[in-house]
Image (cartoon, rainbow, N blue to C red; front, side, top):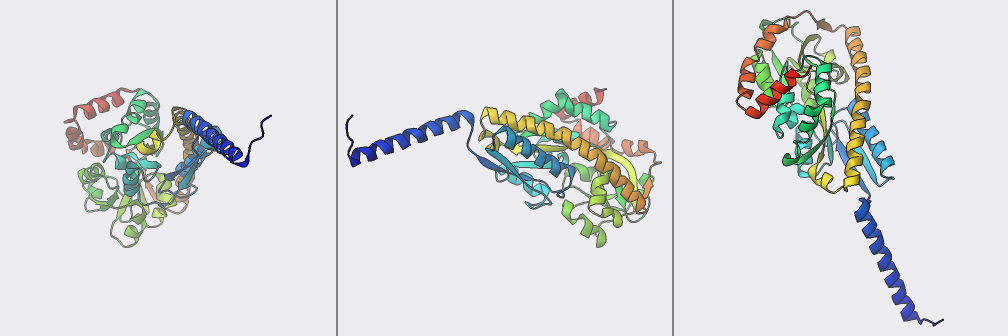
Length: 336
């Protein structure tokens, strides 16, 4: 056998390492194996169902990808309020984001339809719509706006609460300053009901109630209780005016960095996390309602919803000017 001198051995070693790195690189490109940590934003607290669902999704992805991909969840507004994190996700600075449809509707038009007041007849109706072809089509509509829609999360029904007086009719709402999300649609809704909308970030509502900057707000049972709003706003009226869901999106930039196989892993994990979240949500909703009742919150159930629904006529008339929105509303209403 030939005897190699030191220079030849060195050259042979370099060639071997280069070939090995090339093979690894080709394998990584073929399988999408580049390891990465994905940042996920959520404004809710650490034990909230949406945060738990994101962590569950992360565990599924880590398992399915052999530990190549991980999700680090930033909860409790660590990356900013929802409006800010949506903009950062669109720019690719945040990878994943759980947000309410009313806010992302500022970017994705179809989301405004899901946030329309009194659109869904019940939670079951909403779930049937979102779990079917309509829901899939809506998620597929995100890409031109810098996002990819992965899954819907439940958000229950939103109702109006305040610390001034029980609201049983539209007359009772007059003069009340009600916090709404930073969404023009939500402001229009409260204005149509006769109250004064105040757009505030979610994290500023408790301070707003304490300082009497606002008289009340509108949200679901868990958000009403976990934020301590119930301690300052003791009148909760079951208007159930919207049943708009939450939506989980990934930035288009992050999505395009994944191989087709990894994209499938992410999408399937997101869908499974949606079912996981629903179970957690039902439990928390029941616990929150009991806690509010035990604390002495006045719950107004016996309201005539028809005048509230009738007040939405101008909002639906405006939406009808957009043929795509009008058609989607009609399709949703026809789902049995």
